[in-house]
Length: 143
Length: 177
Image 1 (cartoon, helix red, strand yellow):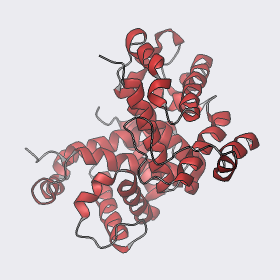
Image 2 (tube, each protein chain N blue to C red; image 1 turned 60 degrees about the horizontal axis):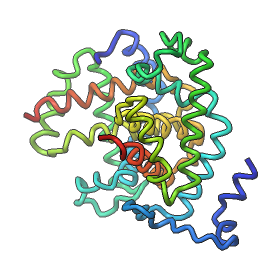
Image 3 (spheres, one colour; image 1 turned 90 degrees about the vertical axis):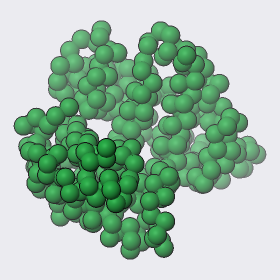
């Protein structure tokens, strides 16, 4: 399921609209993930406060979204472009790759909430494909 | 819409003397930390929006975003692109069928597994639907409801709603073998 030219245009166009709100989107998606899928909290046992809107959640949402921004800029070659991030997730963070799908779903939910008219079915399918491709690129170095 | 509001308002249920245990289901499913209010809210949401979304949105979005699901709708005619899908009256009619099925689960929330026994056999023996599609449809419905409700669809409501849809999916999967 590789990204067609049409998908890439849709993603870049949509990203331009949502980029100013990236921090809020990231924080909201992460907060939702921690509430809706409590098993993901196991990766954040070192945080004092895991509630929505807390400082560590906001900060980490920003980090995650800057990674997504990097992926958008390297959309033509995600596997090579995200090698460093893949190494980070594989060797240091050791996040089970199944969780990438969970976070992707929550990102889509937040995008649907904050940009209801822009998040058309065409944009939805393009973003879903993009986030799956990013997840695949992040899984590259695992084994 | 008002009819649904009074039916599912938590206070109203208590007044009727109905003791619906929102923290425990008759099967092995527990609603756990999902609070009473949140489940009532998500139930109200499902009913409120049954009236408005079933005609167009859910199935359309699924057929566009996950095109392989079209394999189950060979006799629906033209599904070649998003415009064709959105204009297809059979898709709209089938969206209504799916959502009325969900309505049954909402009305029998303590007993979803048994309520869905026949539907599960139908999906497995007659329709031959890959059960992974139940998860795809649930994810799609969550996103559609989120876009309609906006910030009212809080993390807690989302958790209750997704848990409900997971129970529905498990019930539909039960009779597969």
